[in-house]
Length: 107
Image 1 (cartoon, helix red, strand yellow):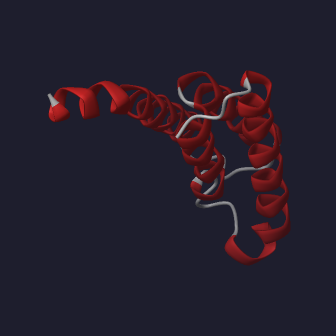
Image 2 (cartoon, one colour):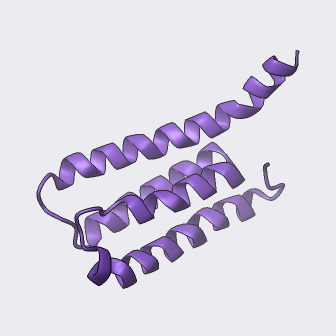
């Protein structure tokens, strides 16, 4: 599924990331900072699914930036951020490759 309006695809990435950051801030007292990227992965998945590679990468970048600004568990923070960014890029790339894989499977 791909939205026709490119601006709308990127708006979904920004909105989804903003909602996830808000949820993370609200839930931090409950879930703590040991799993800083679990909630932030959701907008990456939604953005890549809805908008494709570009919006998925935008959501990854925005979520990574938010993770840097928000208090996260400092132990292994750089490693966790790196793994999160790699996951976001992989999810976005896989979603971008899906239409071609479907065409090949149908042929």
